[in-house]
Length: 246
Image (cartoon, rainbow, N blue to C red; front, side, top):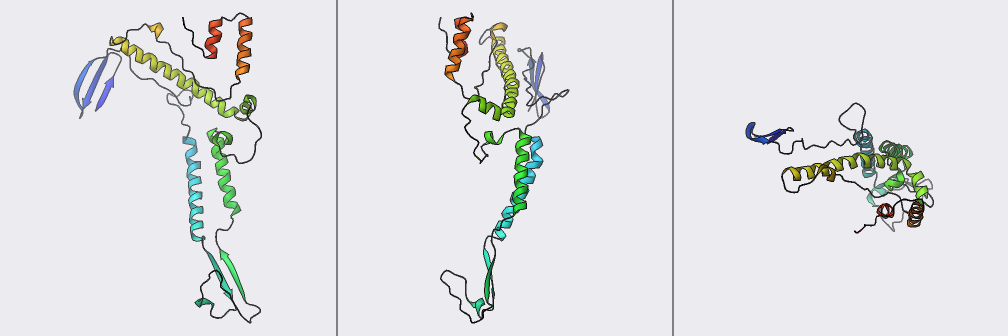
């Protein structure tokens, strides 16, 4: 099924044949375009993950190689020298080996030996993923070292500056889109006489919670100072999140 919608008319096709059509009572095309990350002179936005695909493929390949290596080297092997009949005895706990040959030896090899170059390469790929994504290791929860006390908003803001800036841009872009969607829904309800409303009544606010810890005492002191300089009490209470009942 395919639908074609314009500001004045709509058509629905089934199996490439016109099944229904009629006037568009909404008077608008019900589409809201939200760019994920805006780019100049382009209608479409930029994906957050497209640039990460080659790095993720490389990381998957290296981890797969390491898994294969561990599989082949998981069991330790032994090389016995100067001991007669050793091939008939299994290696097991409590086994004793006796020989008169002073040059006899049993050497162990195999197992999951360390591979510094492999570990370094995987670590560098993960760091590149963090930098390309803009998500700091602290926010992703992959930072293992101690980073001190980050309970204050200032410390968190400095540490997560890039991530917070990116989040604010997303809040603005998606917030505008959500406002348009909500206004469009109200317009449709008005056009279909389900819930009449005026254009000035279709104004919405989208409020995203802060990613930083809020100090209530600081907010109250700020509200008190606003009242002292003449800001209306109703506005101050609204900013604090309190509902004003008339």
